[in-house]
Length: 348
Image (cartoon, rainbow, N blue to C red):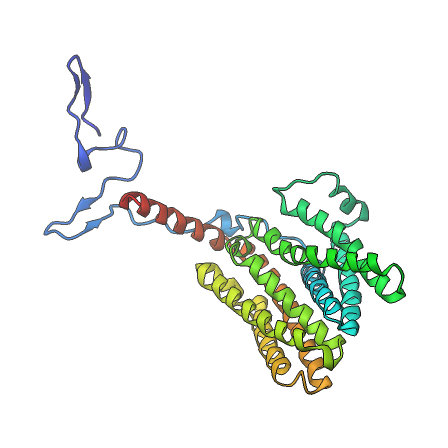
């Protein structure tokens, strides 16, 4: 117990420095003592081991269906990046590729909206999400992006197919190309804004990873649906997209520490390994054979599309696995706390 006492002359009997005790000597961790003979300090109480209440998860795992939400992530990326390729093909005179990508984007955004509404349960719930615009909410911003992008993609495809109002169709195509990257990337921000450990800890890489994966999907669709003579930009986009996706995914695994296990094990690990193999095969096929053979271009495109889908489903399942195991919630928090205490001690 502390021997300090208050006297008329002030505080007396205090024990400064490392000999001071906390409160009544019962609360808090006892002061560390030096070993005899010098050299380091030893704790009187060993570090507490990790546990949770009956081993229950600390955060609630998402109850979303993988088909709805992972499918929504994949299709939204395909639509958004596809609009960029469509506008580029339009401006460079690649008419058949432009039309194919406009129709692809319209179909993808329609299916992604259907998947989202199916997850919500009733269509009016999506309309309710548009009652307000909250810039600090990725969900609110994403809802408005989707609501604005969808009609633009539809108008661009309709004008191209019918030949009516060509100027309005070109303006709609440019509008879809401007908003398309945001549609492709915002879902990464949306996942990173949750409390799910694998998604939240990857907040720095997730938007880049989703954008690169969207480029892989769109270039794959262009190779699959466009003619061989027009697929030069799609082949280059495929190589760049695969390279960017690989860098972002490796950075995510390296920086997330123990949580990276969820990206390597179980269903998520199998899907992401399949995605890496399909991406490498698709990019190599597109770069080496896609300009010579229509069949090779189509097979490469199909591989790239499958790779992007595997990436989105793999990330989805990694998040679910991380939420179900409480250690992925607690251990990163303890690591950050230890780093903060170390920084405070060193004065940095």
